[in-house]
Image (cartoon, rainbow, N blue to C red; front, side, top):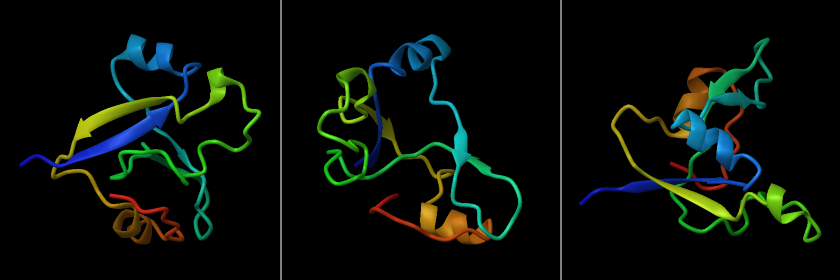
Amino acid sequence: MDEFIYHFTCPYLLPSILKSGYLTLTDSNFSFERAGMFPVVWLTDLPKPDNMGLLFDSNMPDDLNKTHIRFTIRKRPYMKRWDEWSVSKGMVACLVKGI
């Protein structure tokens, strides 16, 4: 049975994802011990965006609300769990509950 993971985004960012055809890397902003940031794609094994910090304010415009769009991705062996990856990069492991 396949395992799936998820990426949540907002309507504002959707056109650039669809145009490029892939989720782009972004700087992980948790680098404390080393200079610079490490690129990541934020994924989770939770199918619902509840309590993930994606909706910062109930008055947030729908266009910026990252709880509106979910990509479902088949988990691959090369994908790394945040807690393992962050330790290898000298970063603080800060999990919501992730892959």
